[in-house]
Length: 373
Image (cartoon, rainbow, N blue to C red; front, side, top):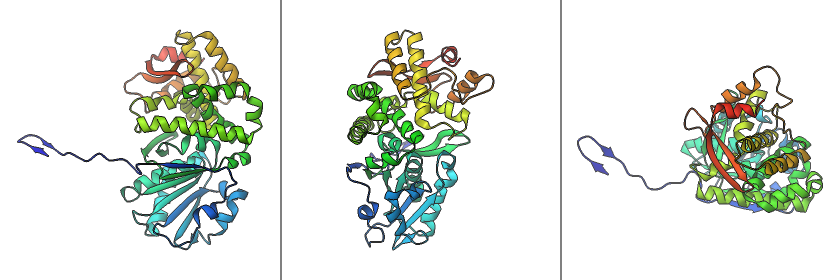
C-alpha cells in the first residue's frame, strides 16, 4: 500500500471468480442423476438443485426428482422454476437466493443447475450473488447449453426485455455433459443448439464446419456418435478461448459472432418467441452479407455460408418473417446500440474475412441498415 497526502492505493492479490478450474465430464451412458449426486447422502457440502418444469418431466430425470419430498431430501434442496426465456428474470434468480437463505446455506455449499442455458445462466448468477459467492455445478440438458451456455462462466438474466443485460462472470466447478439428453429435445430446441455449434465451426474448427456442410442428414437425424463428437469439439474450442480471455477483453468477443444482430432480433420479437440459436444463425447470415458488401470476405464465402445455413432451415433473409411492422431496420439498429460490446456510439460487430479468420470492428449505422432491408 502506498500513501501520500493526496492518493491512497490499495493492492489486492490476483483473484478468480467462482472456481479456478472447471472439470467437464462427458458421459456416454444414459443420464442417472440419482447415482451421480446421491441426493440426501450426508456430506460436507449441501446442494440446492435448480431445474425447470420441463426438465423435471424428462424420463431420465424422474427418478432423481422422486427422491425429494416437497423439495427436500436430507440436507439437499430442489427448486423447480418456470420453463423458458420468459422466466429468465431477476425475480427467478432471487428465488434461488431466497431458497438458500431460508435453508441457511453456508458459503461452503453448492448450487447445481440442471437444465438448458436459462437454468445454467440463472443458477450461476445466483451463486455469484449468494453471500458474495458460492460454488456452482451444471448438468446441461439442451444442446445449446452443452456446446455453449454452461461453459465459460458467463451468467446472468434478461432485464426489461434486453437479453442478458445483468450478470457476472462465475464459472462452474463441474459440468456433467450427457449427450443422450439431446435425443429428447424438441426440434426447435435441437436446432437452436445447432446454431451455436455452427458458429463454433465458423470461428475455430474447419472440420466441425465441414460436418455441417456435408453431414446434414446425420446431424438432422441426431446421429449419436456424430452429436457426441460435435459437442466435444465445441467444448474444447470454447475452453481454449475462455482460458485465454475469461472476462471478454479481446478474443472472447469472437464468440459473439452473429449475436449482436441475433440478440436484437430476439428483443424485437419478444424474448422467447425466436429460439436463441435461430436468432444467432440469422445474425451470422447478416454479418456475412455485410462482409461481402464491404469486400471484407469473398462472394463465394458468403454464398457458401448462406447455403449451409439454409440446409438447416434457418432464415437468411434481411427481414425475418416473425418481425412485422414498419421501420424494422431502424428498430433493430436502436436495440443493437445497447449491446454490451459497444465502447462508443458506434456498434461493434464480430466479422469474418474467411473461415476461422475473425475480427471485431465498429461499423457505421448506414452499413448495418443496408443489410436489414
